Image (cartoon, rainbow, N blue to C red; front, top):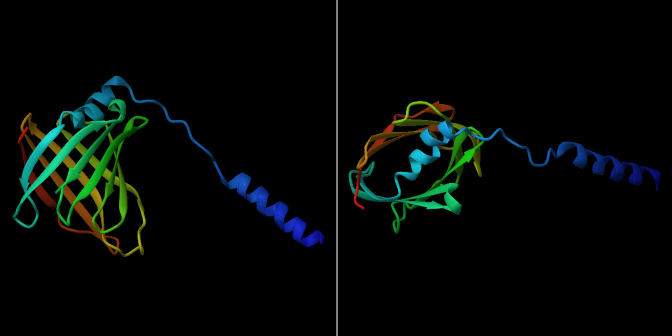
Length: 172
């Protein structure tokens, strides 16, 4: 009787000490928000591009959650439809890419150039194996109010793939 009770007690103690709980972050400054989430908010609307297969594609950006998030729907209504969610995480901009492959890369960017946001991978949810293909880098370049470029880089077996670039034009 004493051994099972000891194991239960140790198990409960391990759960209590292994859980950090919510962690507070240092809030972004207005200058950091201006070149990160506020910049992405300017994309609100519908954009068109030639996708990586040379076909016309559409992306729709919507500001949501009282202005704290931006949702991007890539190629809506197609079998390649994907969603990206942009939110601040302290002084960094986080994007989660809900990929058509079924995994969810998380990438972060720090404030930098006002016309370019560079995201680097900080984790991948639902990765079937360490060698599985996932999107691990994204760079958004703001050319002007009606033109934007996205450059995506995949990773597989620990190696970076060739960048895939898409040029976007605002439709509304």
